[in-house]
Length: 147
Image 1 (cartoon, rainbow, N blue to C red):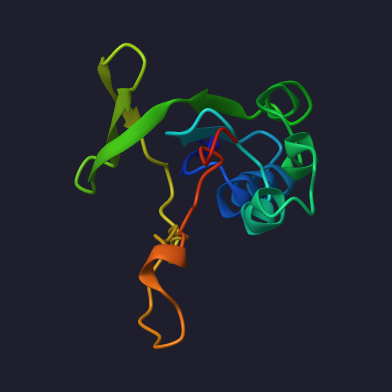
Image 2: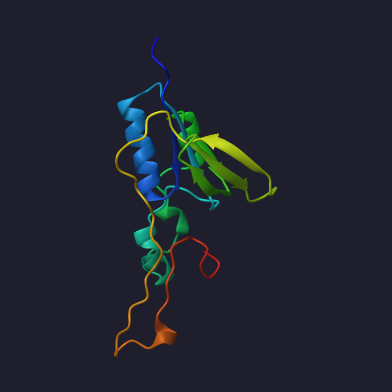
């Protein structure tokens, strides 16, 4: 009997939702869960500068798919406002904190560990003589100036 595969995707912006969607296409029976510490998923992070700069006037234009779309259309479970605290590679679990309630739970990571891992990055400030440190802004989420 074939064991059902399980995948836990940590991070729900472009790379995370793309990985979950690809996994769904490759295996329609796989149990897939996306966890995101943010309250939004599947948005164009690269478009944030255009939103802040006023080129994109409606924040909704940055979103590709809603959590409901992932749940209903793709059968992918989405946990918003949950943060991965620790990955236990021995028993293949992830300690996850619900940021609203403060409770923690242990979630199975996956049944088959892939060789590559997609990991998000933090903005890196660079030093340039022609850029004032005061005018340099970094952002990686939709929580920016009331966004």
